[in-house]
Length: 194
Image 1: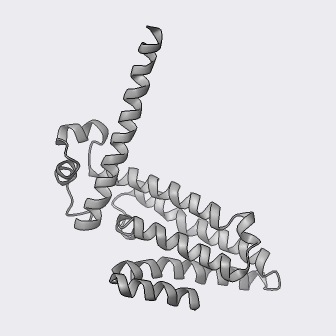
Image 2: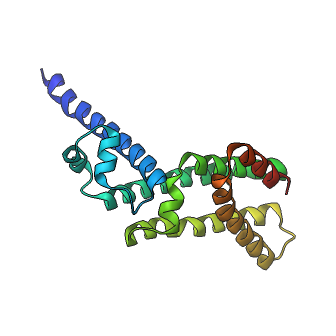
Image 3: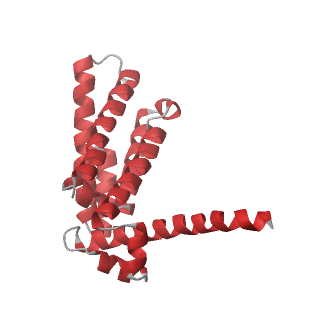
């Protein structure tokens, strides 16, 4: 009987975690389709197939949804960065390493259309604080990579190469996301050739 008592709260928590993930998936879709300003919690609840009251059990407003998505994006990008800038990745030939970075970052941006909506014009200081650190972290990781991969470059050249890389990876995903599917493939291929 004690086992049944303890299984209940764990199952409820697991369902709650799943429900939160599902609501965030829907919020991402709604923000992508409508934009942050036009989206409402009623739109999100309707698309999630739940009542607004059920949504409010997990998120009290649209801002909390945006914050939770920003946390999700930040954590996922940190995992991507850890993979493409790992010690193992540093041993890859340069072209393979670059392909890996491009593929991982483009895949992230294609999977998360609302990222740029929250990143470009953060709806709050909390969201801005989360997203503001991402380019700085990417800059640091590129600089460290260039120190390993191009030790012949001066520290200034390494920093500038990292800065250009970060700006490239900030601009190109937007261009690719706006393109039609056939052109998208060509743009990714062009990025890899450049």
